[in-house]
Length: 129
Image (cartoon, rainbow, N blue to C red; front, side, top):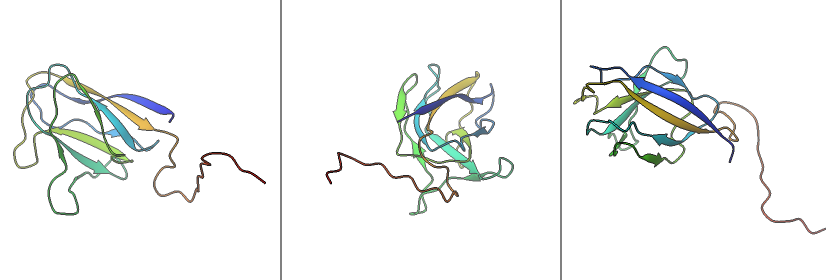
């Protein structure tokens, strides 16, 4: 699986929400947490155009959150494509980070971006005529 690594997003000191980053090259498959993360869940906002963001919720009506540990990597089940912001805490209970926090994001660039008409086929095993 070819990956693209993005340094960021960044939550500035005294904030709980990062700036947006462009993840349109493929779905997020791994997050790397800052080593100095102040204990809080991680939640997300997403955007199709990088201008208007919405909080991410699951189909059951609960906000999408991850219980995270400072300085670790988190494999995620092909989270999203498009633009994304990371939040320390939840939308109802944001947690301010006292210092700058920079993440790293790995994208699966072998996957077709959402919204394309491209069909990708992977053959497993061989073909016997």
